[in-house]
Length: 228
Image 1: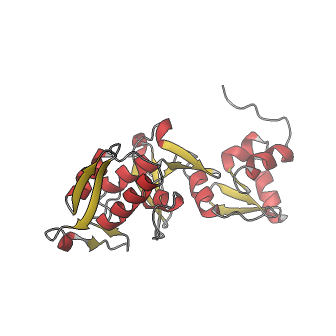
Image 2: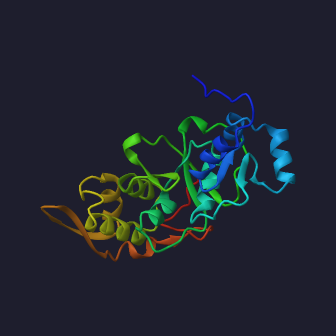
């Protein structure tokens, strides 16, 4: 059942939606509050609303949020995307490296959709289960376990994956045995020992030290840049 639209524009309803999203809202959300394109344009000209990206608007006088850039991208994805990979590592505090681009996983069914991707966004295609998703303020982010598996799959620099794995395990965010893809990936580069809690990775192996490279985008990888 669709959301019932009001008979007339409802500013309080629009504000309620926007206030949960750092002051931002989408064209579709505006429509459910009775604000169609002509009325939006009127408020843009009046300085009450600002258009920040195609299909995304902001209440001009709403206080600035800490991660507005993520909210804008999430609304651009029609609220279907989940922040992942390097972006999720940073949000979980598992990496000191700030990614140059925003990484977003969108549904696998969208793989053949044609649309203009913002220049600061790297898209990955895949389905994120409910138990692989958490919320960071107004936006969804992949869980630590899913994030680590994703980073190993795209061959992010082994030292970054190693540090994130060890931090996540030490903080109790993951079980050391719960990320088989990460374990298999790190075994290629690091010595490994085992304890009752699971695998522990030590120093880099000599044969692997020369395999680390840098992708053209500036995000370190172990040999390739995956844009899925």
